Each structure stands twice: as C-alpha cells, then as structure tokens.
Length: 161
Image (cartoon, rainbow, N blue to C red):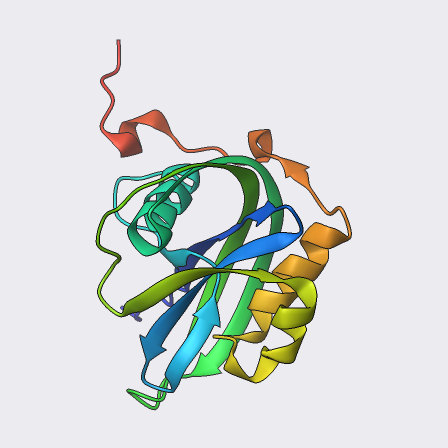
C-alpha cells in the first residue's frame, strides 16, 4: 500500500483595527519573523475554532471569524528537515475582542499592531509571502461566507440523535 500524502492545514486571522493589523513576532528556525496569529488545525476542531484558539494563544485576543478571505496553497523546503512541506492555509477576517494579560505561546515574542506601510517595509521578515498576500486580499475586499465551510458534527465529538 502506498503512503498517502497530506498537506499541513493551517489557519490565520487577518485582524484590522483603525488601519492597523494585528501581527505576531515569532522565533523560527530562520530567525525572528512576522506573521498573523496563525497555526495548525488540531484534531477534533473546526477551522473557525482553530483560528479562534490560535489568536488567543499567540496574541492574547478574542477573535470571532466572520468571513473567509482565501484559501492558499504553498510549498516550502523545510530548513529543519530538508523535506518539501505543502501548506493549505485558510485566512479569516473577523471581529477582534478583548485583550487578555496572559502568556503568549512558546516562541511568540510579542503581538504588535502594524499599518500597511510598516508591513511593506518589513517584508523580508514575513514568515512567508502569504502574510502580505492575505492582507492584500483583505484590503481588496475578497471575502466569502463561512457557510462555504462545513465540519461534520461527529468529528467534533457531538452526539447523534
């Protein structure tokens, strides 16, 4: 039987408030990088739950996804393993809520609000080209309703009647 190839599924929150975007500075194997609050989909959670969790863990903010900005596929050579990794990234727009005084995820140095010119000026520090691409798509008004996404209830551990 041949091995089944699977991409890494990630989520990202594109959060804009008063012309600034909520970003995180994070330690990576390539040095300190900028990214949206983002991360991997965990078992037994929906995409919306994942982006809400990642925003809390990485930026200590409540976040409620209201729209899908885009779905992005990118392939990178892992600097750690030397293997090609394919990412399938779901970027969400939504409402940012309260900020909490809680520790940020391991490797996250700080959350910072940046305007678009600051994002452009720091391009070489972006985690990937998807950081700016998803902001550009957000600014261009690209949105899709969350109703396009469907998570089968039993995956989330709900009981069937």
